[in-house]
Length: 512
Ligand SMILES: Nc1ncnc2c1ncn2[C@@H]1O[C@H](COP(=O)(O)OP(=O)(O)OP(=O)(O)O)[C@@H](O)[C@H]1O
Ligand SMILES: O=P(O)(O)OC[C@H]1O[C@H](OP(=O)(O)OP(=O)(O)O)[C@H](O)[C@@H]1O
Ligand SMILES: O=C(O)c1cccnc1
Image 1: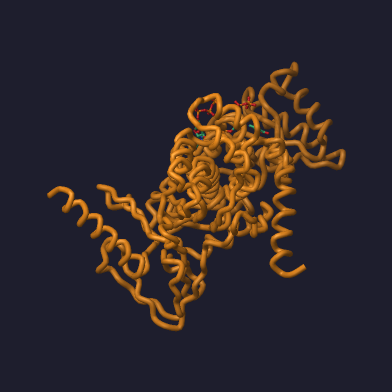
Image 2: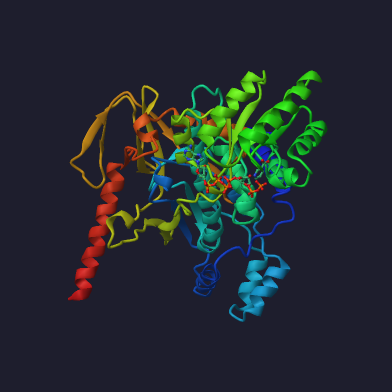
């Protein structure tokens, strides 16, 4: 077997394995698209231009949650979707029932598969506005059909991974509490099934250590964690009996929920009784969870009580509408909290419900020549960058200094000085020397064949930890971060200006 077929075979085996995960098994999402994709496809088919090649970029325009960057996630779902994309008999019967499409077109869809090329920035990468996170090339009908689904996958998971990163970093500011883990607990408040499972996956990418969601844990082999609900405590005649029963069932894995009645007068004293009993029997009370009230005050008092009783190893877990702001504030107040259970605000990204990725046509083949395309807007920030492009990350001394969006056939010699300029305020310029270039978009599909071996989740999570270190604290801070430079190469900038002038010329001619 030669090198290439070996890579392809491993990529195929991995996606087959992923397709069997509980979260993907028996799923069929071909009709997870907007009607207009089908009507456009039909229009292209009728015009005989359905096989014409196009290039689309997927990108976002503004960092989510006031962050200085986003973390990419969702590529695995995109790959699974494209790999399995077929119209079933039931899909075709439904489309026929709409009385909108000809038999010929439906017959054509019967043999439909994805034949395109996809280049993508791997999951767990730090990215910035306007950078193509995916570049999709292929016959216009195929590239068009997939727009809605792939946007939904990348938008959702990248958003939650970024939100999780903010929360995890806020928790890590708690110096005295070694690793400060964040546990994802959002299932009940997520916008239903996929938002909870893929949201948990994205939360792990962002740095959460475990989830309470069993389906996510089973699918992705994640550490699963849990305590008890208030109903458990309420269902016993007394809090102490509830604690005793739970500790007897799980003597080495008990975290007691102490806020059902009165944290300091009842919950913590009862937890201490159970903790001491466990200690006598050779076990350790793992933790207590405080889920209401003043978490700073209660955690400090609880810590003192636990320590005074000799239960120094018992950890304190906090939950209750936590987010990065409350966590940071609690840390500032000196709260004695060792780990954080975070649900609603993380899984829904409550202060920023959408990332806003878009998918835009940037090139089209005409008579076998690929021509760049531009989308003009009254709002200059919405004018697209035309042509087949790559994203180059430029490093000096292992520090990311700027990203450069360039045309694919451009080459750079890092031993030569490179002048970068702000694409809007072009007088702002800087020269870099002795830099290193990393090309962020990697091949994923070529001619419909999967050529990318999807990484395991721990690898993606570890990638995030490495990635963020390349950026300065001014870009990483949570409040009003400094904008990172994402520049256009000179040839791309020139091409964009040329197309804008051509468009202006046509507009003036039409108005005469
Ligand atoms: N010391 C603190 N500083 C800042 N925020 C805190 C502090 N302690 C708790 N909080 C936050 O304040 C909010 C408290 O909300 P609220 O008073 O509605 O509910 P609660 O105390 O959890 O009680 P319940 O669950 O019974 O409604 C939560 O978001 C919690 O994370
Ligand atoms: O506050 P969040 O960040 O969303 O974290 C999840 C919340 O879900 C549970 O509460 P819930 O009242 O639903 O159930 P419970 O009675 O078991 O505590 C848990 O106790 C947390 O408070
Ligand atoms: O295990 C827990 O403590 C838990 C799980 C889900 C939601 N709230 C809490």
